[in-house]
Amino acid sequence: MKYPFIIVLALVSLHVHAFDWGKKGHSAVAYIAGENLSLKAKKAISQILGGEPLADVANYADEIKGDPRYRYLNPWHYVNMEPGEDYTVSEKNKGGDLVTAIAKCEAVLKDEASSNEDKQFYLKLLIHFIGDLHQPLHCGRAGDKGGNTIQVQYKGRGTNLHSLWDTKMLEDMDGGYKDVAQGNRRRYKKYARGNVLDWVRESQDIANTVVYPSVKKGQKLTDAYRERYEKVVEQQVKKGGYRLAYILNMIFA
Image (cartoon, rainbow, N blue to C red):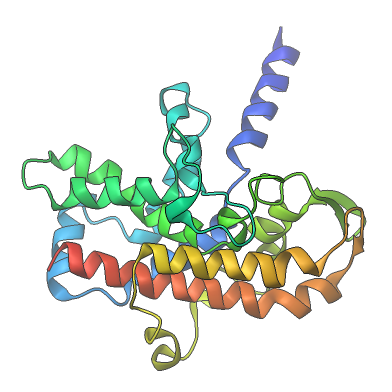
């Protein structure tokens, strides 16, 4: 009987580790945000999270994917549209999407009647979803499920375009999440403006003008591909971090 158990455990592990932006990317986004909070926001968030750093809870929304109770959250991680289609006129997912998910999180956190338990849950989701928003293929095309059906090879192994941009390039970048988070604060702080729909359009544009044209189905890719596009990945992670701080500072103003 132990072999079926091992197989099930392995399958669960594979599912749970199919992270968006990878652990490194989400932790970097949250770390940057944590370093740029106002004193008021930092105090409120510390009370909600019981002192846990933002980076330590950044992957919570992915970690609960294997729990059937939270299966309804799956479509909240992305918003897919066709090229040239604006979110405001696109067909909406009845189960919600990344835009409506972020709005829900903000509403709960602003509501004084919300319990601390609810605030903690939706704060963890918000931290993660702002990271997802800045992975361009989470605002990719509906027809290929945000690049999930575009099969490629990376360093001799089969994968898909979505997974490549979600995790594999970040995993191959030097250092941990704090290393990814390093950068000129003045350069990136300028991105802490606008709103969620502005950022959706930006990510959608990057997906359609940079990510999709970068490969052909079945293409064999090497480290040269990562070296060419890792600056785009780094920039999106950093934008996500400063924008997350921007949102949190407004919520807890």
